Image (cartoon, rainbow, N blue to C red; front, side, top):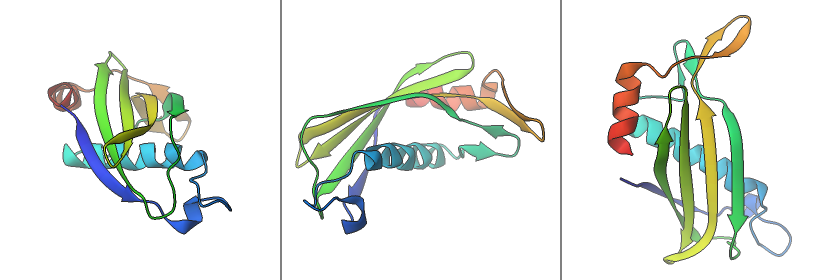
Length: 131
């Protein structure tokens, strides 16, 4: 089941031609990822669990420009033992402008750093139900 938000392109996200700089698509993928987790009553940073990205990509199909309204549509594509993958479509007036992919891993956070862990059952249920 897809999850979506709308983002209006800000001037600061564009280059001199008022076309969105490629790096912003990755920021927007993070924006929808955080909104998606919040919609499930979760966060990407919980007490001792976090979701660092281990793979990202984005294919650009047509330019987004200053003041465009971009609809971001997130679909969960895989809930693994320790990882979560999803795709994000970027639409402008219903047309595909870009397509992104992300994979995050569930990690325990400690003073020593991150360590991969199995997705806790309560979180897995919410993610699987959204997928």
